[in-house]
Image (cartoon, rainbow, N blue to C red; front, side, top):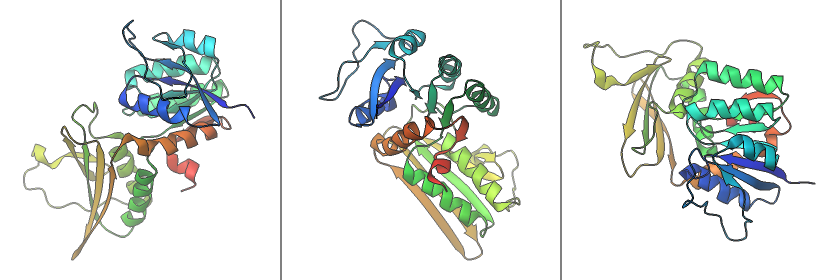
Length: 265
């Protein structure tokens, strides 16, 4: 069986480098190209021992044409993801997208383009299996406890707030609950310290050096609280989810949102 051919978009970023490293050690997958928005003559793509040299360019169209991948893995920013999606689907390339901050309209466009070109697209706000389980458990708890808030903590360079995982968690909890969460009385309705409201759940975002990615879902009821927390210790935790998505997306058409769908949760 031929290995799945993969191009990594955003390959010089922290997540991109981790993806390249992980895929180079996966026998069923072959990294055939890498793309970054700006590539200087002095920059080289660090590769693990035993991994063959791969084409590296800022020209995505050139890489897709010359390398002929089966899958494009994208860990960039939303402004770069959508043009890449339009180009990749035109080339008949499947998509695995970990970029956060995509709007509902952009997700709809990804779905339409992937269906039109008969390719698959997996978009996940978080590829860590533990984070997916955290959301699943929060959905279960949301049916039984009437109050909930989310605290998400990330490194100081993260572009979006609240995080994509926090937004997805709040939406999943609200859908599972089927009715609004109760809220404490607000004495000062203009207080900015209470965080952003998503589906009736207050989300508090922390951005500090030294953090990576952390989230706590705190639910409350009379005389009790329940905390469900996931901590990302290193970006290595995302790799099993990325590999799973690559292996699954080549057998699908249209958009699959969230790793939980692939896990059957």
